[in-house]
Length: 184
Image (cartoon, rainbow, N blue to C red; front, side, top):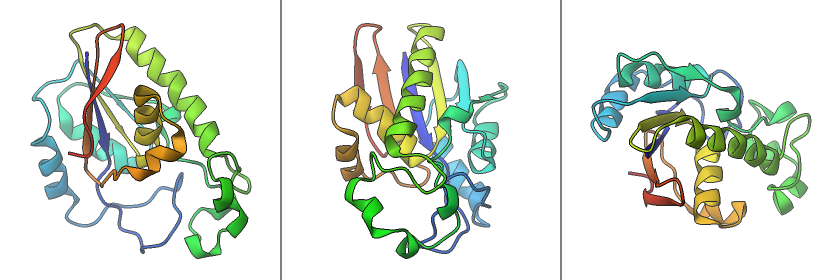
C-alpha cells in the first residue's frame, strides 16, 4: 500500500498566528499551489481522506474524480482559547512540555497523536495491499504518523520540516511500514 500524506497549501494568515482548528482562507494563488502538489502525486488514488477543514478539502477535491471522505481525527491540533492569538501570547510554560501540556480549552499533542493513530490503523486495515491512498491534512498530523512509523518520540518529529503543499510517502506491506520520503 502506498500512502501519501499531503499538507494543505499556504493559508492567508498573518505570520505568528496560532490557527489549529479555525477555518482560515488560502492565499490567493492557492490554485497554482495545488497544481504544484498534484504534479508530485500519482494520477489516481483508490481512496482519499481529508481533514474536514476547507484548506484541506480544496486540495482533496482536485486530486481525482473520486469522492473523498473527511474525518475529524485528521484535524490540526485544537489550540482552544489560543486559536487566532499570536504565538508570543501563548503561556511560556506550555512550551516546556508541549507534547503533554494541554492548550487552554484544547488538547495536547499527545491527545492528537492518540486520535491520529486510531484513524491510521483504520486506514491500514480498510485498504488493500496494492491501494494508493491520499491523506490531505496538517503538519502535526503528518508528524504524528511519521513518528509512529519511525518509532520515535513525538517531540523528535518536530525536527522535520513539513512545508505547505508537501508530500510524504509511506509504504505498508501489512507487516511493516516505511517512510519512503518526507516533505517532497
